[in-house]
Amino acid sequence: MRISDYNYQWLPGLDAASSCQDYLSQNPSEAKALIWTLNQEFTPVYALEPRQGFSADVYETLIMMLAGQIEPEDSDDFVERVSSPCKILE
Image (tube, rainbow, N blue to C red; front, side):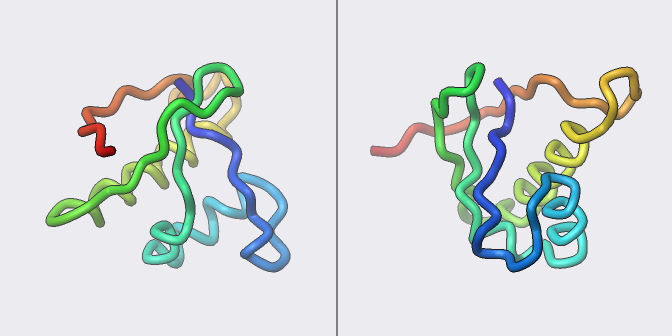
């Protein structure tokens, strides 16, 4: 699954994943304002909402995975797929 491309309209002037990643790296608390999704191909399968004690660490990891997805495919830092333990809430 890939982390989805996000709707950046709420962030004036940001129109690319790299710009969003740069912004979030400098403003990690803004990561909570995004709806982070896991996609299978281009279909959203899950929306992720980190909660409780480790949520800041989870958002930091999501930002790092986003950064890895915008790396060139031949880069050692490229992220193609992710796996995440989650609890499904209704």
